[in-house]
Length: 252
Image (cartoon, rainbow, N blue to C red; front, top):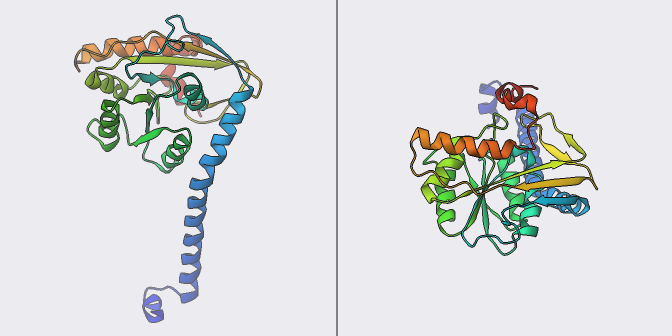
């Protein structure tokens, strides 16, 4: 063994050191994956209990939810409080969320499981991919579906085709939900991820249901995309961003 290592230009001590470093790094990642969701779930539940939540629901969807499963759509940077709000206002329903297949996606999937949700791992932009097929299968079983139309990489505040294709295939309406906070912090991520301050006010706007596209033609998808973006940008995107979304999404 030593002779093989020396033949490759590696000293046995160096090999053991690198192996130990790799093992420790793997253990740290495993520990972070297990502990982070538990801490995040505790933080989210504790934080949302302090918020003063004001809901604008002109169609009465929250007070009288339809029996049919829905597709919940909200911007990626408003994701933090959505699990707790769903549990509070839509009790007894089952939900599956589309989550990326990355390491961060694994942490998010474990976090969602602590709220009783399932995660479909993959990308909504890859029609026919594992995540897309899983979300369709679980959706057909009667679960609500949660999608961030501009995630997981952006551009910010731009609806991608994935949510529209899911809606069209399942013939299921999309429910746009927006929220804004009286006081918040923004991370320097691509989406400016928002964290409300404790005891701040959270305004929730529940939009009108958007009918599923009749077919997957470009014109039909474009019409539904326009309607969904308009609903999600209302009271969320400043006027300065309405026509410069793509440019702002690339800012550091």
